[in-house]
Every structure is written in C-alpha cells, then in structure tokens.
Length: 407
Image 1 (spheres, rainbow, N blue to C red):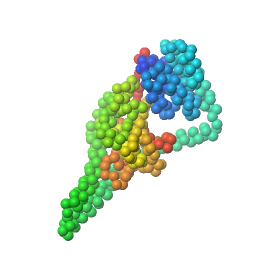
Image 2: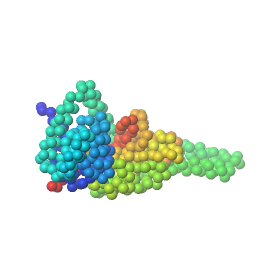
Image 3: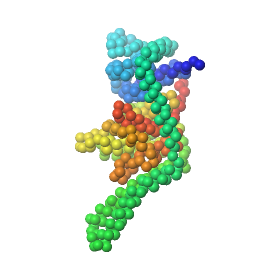
Image 4: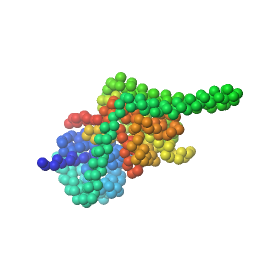
C-alpha cells in the first residue's frame, strides 16, 4: 500500500485579515494545513509549536516587520529547513536584495496570482521534504522513538479517568491533615483553659490557625462543587476565545498585581490582546467552566513562580500565554519564568491527592485534579504538562473546526 504523504504546513504572517483569508482560500485542499499569525511577534511565539514547512511573510507590518522576523528565524539552526517567501506591495530591487541577503527563499509582489503562489509553495515544499529525508539514520530513529513515547503517554493519560468515588476519597485525603490539626488546636485551647493559661494572644493565635485550616477545607469543597454545578448546568454557548481569556485573567487581576507578575498573550499585554488581535477564534463550549479552567491554570503557574523563584523587591514574574490553532485544535499554553517541575512532579500533578506545598492553606497550593476533570468532561479537551528547554509548560487543547473561508 502506498504511504500517505503528510500535509504541507504553511504559516501565513500578515496583519491584514483580508490577505490572510485570501491566501487560505488558495490552499484550501487536503494537501495543506494553513496556520496564521497577525503579527511578527505572534509568529515567533507560535513557530516552535507549529514548525511549518513554508512561511509566507509580509514585509510591512506594525510592530516587528518581515525583515526582523526573517532575521530572527534564520539565526535559529533548528529552523534552517523552513522555506520563507516574502510578500510585499512594493517592487523595490533594494528591498528584494535585502530580503535575499537575510536568507529569504523567494519574493512575491502583492497582488499576486494564486496559481503562481500555489506552484511556488508546492516546489519549495518538495525541496524541504527532500532535505529532511537526508537526515542521518540516528536522528530518524530517535525521532520515531520520541513519537512512540508521546503516543503511549497520551494513551495512558486518557485511561486515567477517575470516577466520582475517587474524587470523594481525594477530598477525604485533603481533609485528614487539617481535621487532625483542628482537633489538636481545640484540645490545646481546652487544656489552656483548665490550667488557667488561656490568654487573649494565645486564643487569637489558635483561632487564626484554625481559620486557615477551615479555609483550606472550604476551598476543597468549592473545587468539588464547581464540577457538580458544571455538570448540572452544562449549557454550551458561542465563545470568543480572546475575550474569554481576558475575562478569566481580569477575575484574578488583583492577585497578579500583588504578586508583581506580568501576563502576556502572544507577546501582548493580556488586557490589550482581545482588542488588538485580528484572529477570531469562535467555539461552542461551556464559558463558566472554561473561565475557571484558565484562571486556575494561571493561578497555579503564579504559585509556582513564587515557589521556585527567589522573591524580593526587584523580582518580577512573567506568565506567557500562547494562543494558536491547528487544523483541529485550539492550543492554549501557559508558561511561567523559571518554573521547572521535575518528572516526578509532572507525573503526579493531576493525581487526586496531590498538593503543591504541605504547609499551604489556600486553593493555590492544590494540584490540577479538579481542573483536569472540568477540561475532559465539560470542554471535551485535554490538559497536560510538557517540558521545553527544561521549562514546564501547561497545555490546554480544545476541539476546533475552523469556519469555511468565503472567497
């Protein structure tokens, strides 16, 4: 049986949504998988995750222009096989020479002929795939082993669906330590009273400690109740993802500011991204559940930044959110500077009993067991942690069907 050829991945980088739509319509067949970025900054953010075969790169854009993006890509040896075609509305020979000097493979003037662009992309795709086939046998074997390991890990994660009884057991586990501590505190207060040693300071100290235990237990119930509520009110609505991200992050705005943590989406401040972005991502899902999922992931990453970084007056945290699409999924990645979970922590992060810190009495210190259930049961998605350059990245994947492009 003849082996099926893989799709050619194309990344269209242009701040004009009309041009992006036109290019997507040219490549609307089974041979191509078209992704898009509305700025040079966004293109560089999502490039390592998409790893396209061909980049169609506009030169004149707000922010980073095409030359800057081209220079950045060509400085990365891992991206050397990507073919780049510059697009411009100018026919300036000096501009062309500059592009070739920076490493572009070709240059096209807008408006261009669709068949010519299609032909050029097809030729460059074949050239790229030919060079890739010349990789050493060792590299190919290593790549196949890594793919197999990732596939097995995915299957294992899917098989770890936990029943409601397991959830109740996990709550009991979370409650055991604070309940024991409350019992000891009450006994200490009684002993102090019987021995005439009950002072106002002693009572105040023990009441504050008891309230921390009670708050911790209350947060556990809130997390559990959110799943029950979502199950009873699982009404899907049309959701604009950039707007929902802003709503989720605004709900924890005070926490981010108090923690001295900056948060960006595709390199843009999270409060501005929904207004600036020209990529409309619309899906049908449960908005309340999705807002809670995003907020909880960011809260957890913020907690990890504080936990793994030395916090002082000069410390400034950064949470980077990447938002992009494939042909079938919306990908939301959340990464905190300096957050490096080891393999054991990653493997346990979604267990029902896992807490990030033994002495932490807040919802921040919990793992993502409840959040993962919301993702799977109410958004039909996946939530996992992956490592990239020794940094830990929380990845949320949601099913997505791009709307048809009208010519």
